[in-house]
Image (cartoon, rainbow, N blue to C red; front, side, top):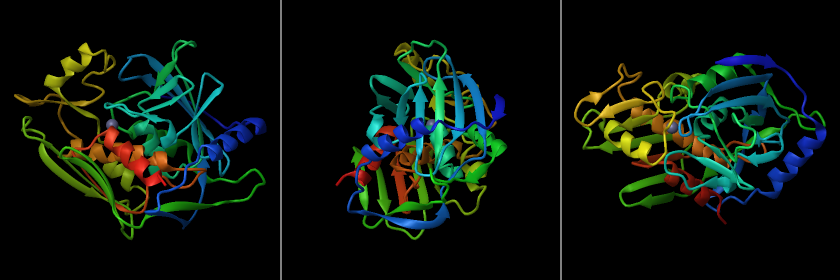
Length: 330
Ligand SMILES: [Zn+2]
């Protein structure tokens, strides 16, 4: 649900704090990666947009306001009207079911679908104000909507995108990381690799032999035009295995989960809430998650998703963020 669209200037003192924070926490890229001009200018939203929705794990309602930001500021969360958490890998925490940002004991959970949409749509600079139901909550979660990034893409497209200017009114060229030699992370038979390539491509594989309706799927995607992400990736929803849902509920997770927030597949009975939006919707969703997790490589309004062929097999948020750390390590 979109509530309102307004344009509001950001306070200069707040911007300075944010830019200082962003540069002070920036880590160097790995020697396997170089930062090159993209030939495009940094962008931001043309106006502000507010959305509200139920969250997956706690089941509470959160409000998110996306606000235009100047070139160089990058993407960052603002929680409880004072704490700024850059959407950067340094603040990402181990978390198997979602990606969480942590700073000063305050947590922002399930950031990946929102960040995927911002990264893929080219919203390079954005202040993301987020509030939970209770003002004293130590953690807040990004709303889940239908389990896809469609709501975020609609919100971004509804308000529009502009070229961003820096604090002295100049445009800034967007830089993007290029992977120069293979980088990989793995655990058991799961892996994520980034190979040198002339353009960005993502190939994902999943394998659920115990759930025949999912089975083994591969999908390879590259952003061939402006609407590729909105059309091919953003509508794909989170998926879960029905037999594992009770176990997660017992662990206090997915309190807000329902047949409206994910596609659910039973080992015995197949998909429980058809129709699927794509035959390989589950595999496409992995690409959505991967873009969101690698967006955490972005610094100061530059691109997060590197120019590389990224290949992931049976991977999840933990391996995705591990690869991001390897691409930033000296
Ligand atoms: Zn996801």
